[in-house]
Length: 248
Image (tube, rainbow, N blue to C red):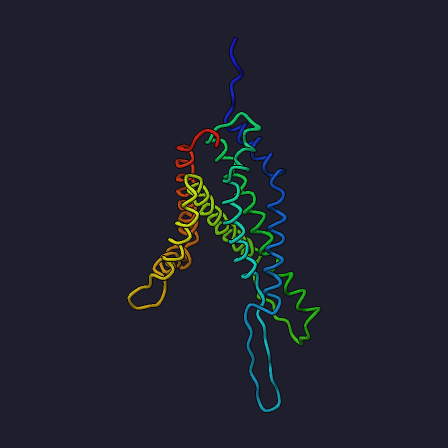
C-alpha cells in the first residue's frame, strides 16, 4: 500500500485559486489607491496656457500616469504583506512546502498585476469623462491611439507592476530573517537616491534604471529585460525563503 502521490503543480494551482479568493482585501486596497490617484489627477497631470490681445487659452493634460504610479506603490507594499507570518500560515491549510507556497504567491502576484494594469490604464479615460462633465471646456482633444497601441501600453504597464511586486516580495522575504532589515533596507534605498553622478544631480540608481528599462526602444529587448529581472528577483526570494524554518 502506498501513500497518494502529491502533484506539485496541482497543489500550486489549488493554492493560487485559494489566494485569489482569500486575499480579496488586496483588491479593495487596489481600488482605494487608484481612486486616490484619480483624485490627485483630476486637475490634470500638467497644465499651461497662452494669451494674446483678445483671447486666452488654458489647457490641461489628462492621463493615467499618476494612477499608475500609485499602483506601483500598491504592488510593492502588497507583495511585502504576503510574505508576513499571517499570510504564510494560510498556506498550511494545504499540504505544502516553501516551493509551492512561493510559486502560488508568484502566480497570485501575476494575476493581481494583470488586473491592476488593466484598471490603471482604464482610469485615464475615466478622468477625461469627469473633466468633460465637471469642467468648463470648449474643446477636448483625444490622443489618437490605436487598439494595438492600447494593448501594448497595457502590457508594458503590467510588466512594470509585476516588477515592483517582485521587488516588494524580495524585500519582504529578506525582512523575515531579522527585523533589523526593516530599518536597514529603507535606509539603503533612500541613501542610494542621494548618490549623484559627477555631471548631474541625479541618483546613479535612478539613472541606471532609466537607461536600462525606461529608454529601451526595442519592445522585444524590453520584455526580455523585464522577464529576466523579475525571474531573478523571484529566484532570490525562493532561495532565501528555503533557508527559513518550515514554520515560524
